[in-house]
Image 1: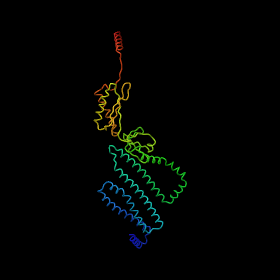
Image 2: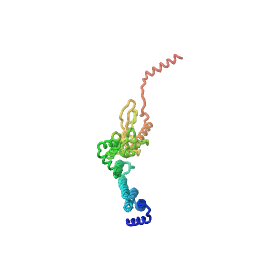
Image 3: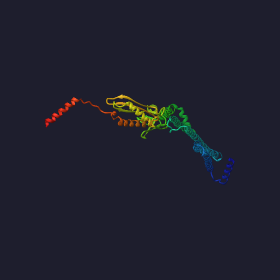
Length: 377
């Protein structure tokens, strides 16, 4: 192949002696790139047809490697063309430097692609749509946070390696290392927010105080963890607003996580009734209400008198559900049906004001009123 190219170059130089060598080299390199792209397109189409009938993993693998494999083909073809092209020493150095940068970029690209494929394959075993999705949320959160951290490191290392190929940057790096004390302090202070959130992200991935789709109460707002990035967390509030908080917030401030160890929750319903309210009948009515609704998980249904007030007594009902959303709906249903039942079956059990009127005093007041009315007549 190389001998054929050499003979072709000799023929071009013999037929076109007026053409400069750099133009011939540029045409040869452009031809090599075009051939590499054409061959890659053909081979990629063949590979796509082969995996068309296979499962999602193989189809995703082929589609994700389209860019890296094309860049690899261009690097190989350009490197081969550069070895036979009539280039000067300076031009050869430039071409080699460009190929080195392309190769470093290819390695970073391959690493990011492999990371994405690994994450996709790993998370295929878990689904967030399950009723009890605690294990799925745990692994999804860990994987997404670690993926962002590793991707950031890959990009940083790739850019550093590319920059170190330049002599000026390499010398600057050596001089920077010589004054690492002051420079490290300045850089550390400047990058403190970023480093703080990156370390917080690693802590969140390992300890997992929050996970994707966790129900949390933060800043006096209730919502679900919608997204965890490398610098901030997005909480989807109950009214569809989004609360954005830095990662470090969940390390430094207290908050409530309603689904930390499980999605099941106990909801409380308070009712203030008259002292004559039939507590035992209310217990039986609570059992009937929870057994008739699919929101109840069959675990907890308790009614107790928890306090006395001047005019009423406080009745607390505890009911459990498989998730925070179902617990909220169950509390509303119990509250509505219990009040409706009291209104219909025991209206006297509802709160009411009392007052005492002494009969002799009332009769005396009525007599005085009649006497005054008669005197006016």
